Image (cartoon, rainbow, N blue to C red; front, top):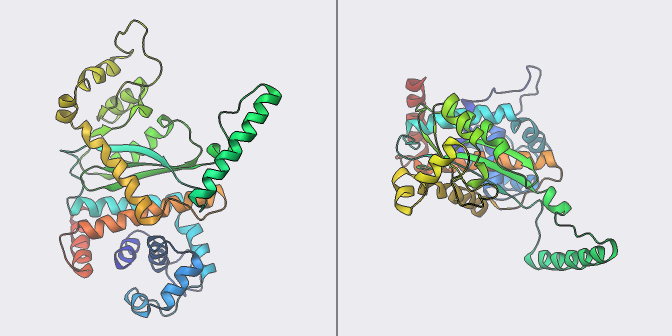
Length: 335
């Protein structure tokens, strides 16, 4: 909570407007939201936790506990894209100061995952699946058509991240709805990560969902990065020949054997799966939002909370005060 407060103090203004009531500052409210996500509580639940933890509130300068309505309205503002970008910019600086990136030796890894749109039991999911199968069979018998893509899949919350494989720090994030293709959000993910790090000549590791000759050209020509993406998208050639495109043929040769994949660093791509697992295990795989926009805010909050946890744990200092002091000094030098 203390790390989140000082992080937001360096990234966000104290208030949204000069005419605000000024009962709370934006960094204080952001720290409360991080506690909410870390403890997997609702807005009412974290309000009760803060009432029972006066020492926590005193550490970040809270004279009184914000109610659940205040926290909900604060989340609507704090988790907008421009505020999330400001927080991720500062997090990247902190990670660079404490050597948690190491992109010169290990690649930037990218991948996407989906979250559950609401909390349900496994038994309920199984029974719903059985019901859908029966209804689908009835519809196929009646109309002669079989639905292969349900409304549930089209409304799944989706999160894509670009992270440093060395320290598990997320450098950029994209949120959306629907289990669609991955390659459309390659450019915003990689560009945001590229502009936030001091070393801009790193490698990018992605799965076959990002396989495209245009993506290789974009990363290598425009940003000077090296791509490591297996050329397995689409149908293979009938004659067994190499894939089309210059860089896709290069990928076919470089990723041909296990030894070569390990030598060039592609085996580190699995670290992004670890990051998704960390988020879902530590913060939950289900979202509490009822609309698509609130679920996108929930996913952004999970990304920011994950980074706060990684930065706190990855510090070589044993106390939060020493960690924050060293981070401020290092960030000033970087600036």
